[in-house]
Image 1: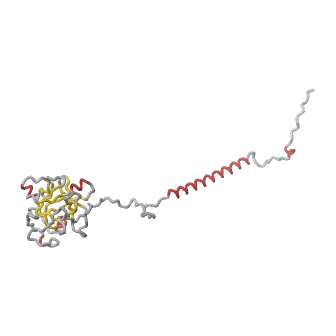
Image 2: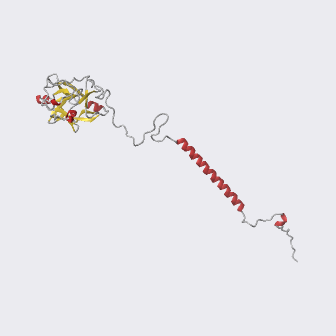
Image 3: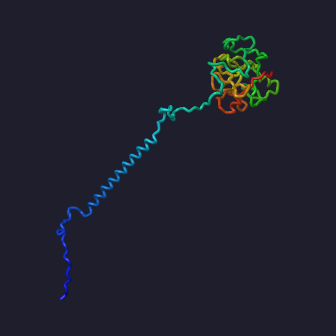
Length: 272
């Protein structure tokens, strides 16, 4: 007869006072705990990110363009115009407030026989000046000392006066400005006046117009070179006569050494 090995009796759950929960799948309690922990972690991260972003915004905040601050006005907006025009030469004054500087420049006088009126009267329109030795001037370049203003055709150029005709064309009668008696006008030996047209200096007959008077009037201003003079247009303030490629023209002031040298002239005794 085979021997039967005795086995320890298996105890049933109810014998240990524990009853399994058969209403849910096994492990759901762990899933709930894991889900709650994940939600808490995500919530904490979102709150931390929001607080960090708010702190960064407060730390990096700047005044808006154009806003005023305690220390003065704010930044200019991109629509604000930039200052593109350089300042005029030191010592230049407005013609309405002060007379032009006379250092190194002759005092302009009317030709002999004319009345010393503050400005040219209508009766003088188109009349030819009567030159005198004292009023006759030549205009010499500062950076090209062997060259003078010289009428060639209708235009004024910077040239050498190495012949009698060239010296005559480089000699002018300096008179009080046709538009402003405190300024200068230059009359040629042929009775024309130097005036700017299309910003180029040329010799033309006085047509009696107000525009001609203004175009033919230039006001002396101090130069950065001792004894030299700059000549500013009366109807285009800020533009001065200068030579470029030996052509006399009216150009806006530029704060450069070349411009200052090209616009510096010496008013000397007439060559003819």
